[in-house]
Length: 341
Figure (tube, one colour):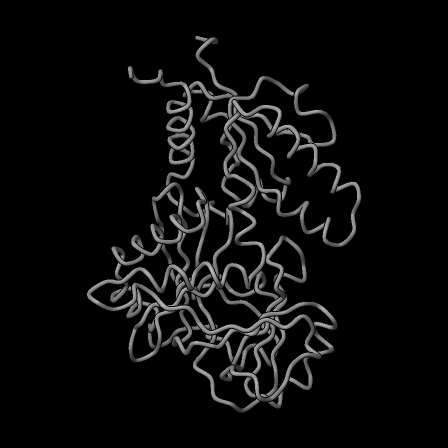
């Protein structure tokens, strides 16, 4: 049976391997005649086996390259060169598609295109909060058309510490405090959507979706100070008691005594989420991605506020079998004989 075994290479950091739901994948996959190997970009890829397919998350390298890391640039170029010189090796996903979600303003334009052309019942399938780009926070002017409260995020969405550091700004007066947080970085201001403290996380694997709710920010007014936070340290569940800073605790729905998240889950339309996932897939061309949805207070209108490439799938049920199913599907298509003309 060894001649039937296909070899799939993963290009992920060890941290991403642990977070992405891959622990134990090798043992499961080999039972289905797929050998999983972890590619080391510090040595030629050709020396690591005859690969049939590669699944990668290169965003960590790109983040280092943006900070001037020349060694990361060499590793990235090794992967790009290998891909060009070995067109028979399937790559999931194509780098030009991943680039669409690495700049938050570029992603904003892509999601706006989806929102503009896809409707359901004569109304938009989803909405996108208005966003504006600033090359530097110093470029801010009071006459800019953005509504407060607003979120300030780095434009880069790569795997870096700064990409996850965000600031909630209640009013225009808070803009005077922003330089200490973002310095001269390019940023995006994204209008805050009132959503009752509940965010919906949607995970997409080749069209299959899994959704869950998490705590988020309470409905806000224009009072109070700016709140700086790291999005990766926010509580992931209403059941987990997490210590937050005083400022963050004031605006974040850490506990849910009224069970608002259960109400949100009861009105959540899974078929609409599937249509949104399909729309984003058509626009972005990604196999593995996640997106965040807010159900607006009072209206329950759907707002897509973020899309990211290959989020953690470790809490997605049966991810190992789902992942290997996708590999088998791609490998089968690649080896299928051409139809008679």
